[in-house]
Amino acid sequence: DTAVSQTPKYLVTQMGNDKSIKCEQNLGHDTMYWYKQDSKKFLKIMFSYNNKELIINETVPNRFSPKSPDKAHLNLHINSLELGDSAVYFCASSQFGDTIYNEQFFGPGTRLTVL
Amino acid sequence: GENVEQHPSTLSVQEGDSAVIKCTYSDSASNYFPWYKQELGKGPQLIIDIRSNVGEKKDQRIAVTLNKTAKHFSLHITETQPEDSAVYFCAAYYLLGRLYFGRGTQLTVWP
Image 1: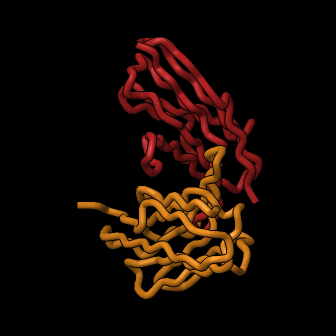
Image 2: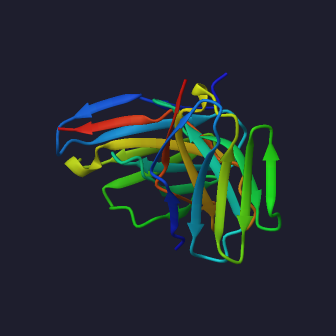
């Protein structure tokens, strides 16, 4: 069974469009994350939600809006797509830890290409 | 925030040799240091981790060392195999789930 799943796996779109990426986890975790991996493989955290509440927003442009309908799902909606948004987006999940780290499990990624 | 530096960016070794990847971090508040392996077309997967109150940890062919004073930590892979070829990331855990990654090391193991 897939622990963290993302759809779609590939997304090709034109500049200026709006698109969404969906993520689901079946691990029973209460915290979910979005990461962006650029063309040089640099992996950077974007957002984190704990029990549907936003707890991390790492200075991401307002065009990116995460939404968590329940603690098993975290979707990412991107408005007015730009060339620089082209990247691989990873969803991850874990049990919440304030000062204690709990392993983050990553999904397979969504490769977004903006033309 | 935390800044994690990772070296080298690429590493090629012969099968059976050892591989060492080194990382430094900037914030002494970081207390947990996981290492992730990312195979082509897949998401990162945890391979080993170390907490700040431990100096060394080993799991079969993989070991990690931590020097808190110098803010250095390293991954050691012995008896490398072709299936070890992947991108390896070090990371430092800050607060509230903030995981800061190094820029990755592309490890290639030649048969």
